[in-house]
Image (cartoon, rainbow over all chains, first blue to last red; front, side, top):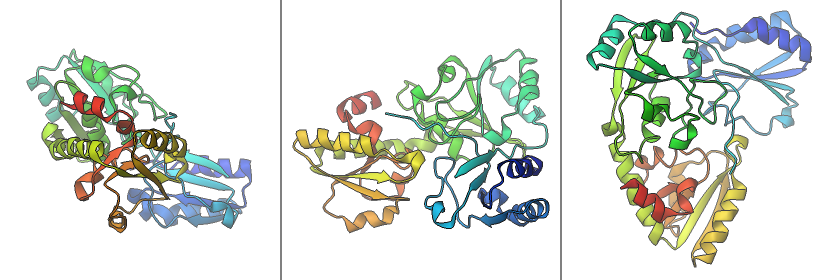
Length: 86
Length: 245
């Protein structure tokens, strides 16, 4: 029902050549996590991890990912957030 | 680390259903302010169908979003919209599911003389729901009461999130400076996500100021005993209270 754009994701991974990727899904798409990981791993050599918990949106990106050497994070269901500067 | 966003667009076409057409006709709608969640923001055909009913479709861009039509939960202030289409339209129509985003459209009107209802059209269930001032009545009461409590509070706790998209430490420090000048005792608290149940660990705080997601200070306050306001209201609470009346 919702377009996951996996072709675009694979193309980006092939272009950027990350080693480790974290995927972040809204609750409504979490049931498709296996499909996403299997498709990407089938077509690329990256290690994929799934963010277990939830997120409030693009304003709420997980912190501390450098500890795990994550090169790329892919977030579904959101687009770029423009923080209001005061 | 790089970040890639995939909007996960709704794959089916969104079209004007008979019940929505009937609704718009019954309301004698001449113009609508149209908004959508990002999944449902491909609405070119839908807009054309509405225009065929001789209804003007007004669209704009909200400050924090990436695309026209799109609305986020934090776009809950009047000045968030590039063009004031809510004021310029008879009816507000939101395309999407859930209540969090359309409620922002009600909250953005709280300082207006009249709060126009928001019509939610869910393209999956194909149903229509009306959100009215009544749906935020309890919140508004609490927001006003909290502002009054803030005015009288001496010890004030300022919450600062470390989430990059919600981090306003500089602003919190600015408020602290102002409050000190006013003879108050402000304290800055830092965390990632705030568990509001933990507020009770600091019983000496008489009022809290939230600098993170503004919906904490408009929605989550309903579920807590402690008074809390948003940073936006904290610098000039007297003016805020006046505008609220």
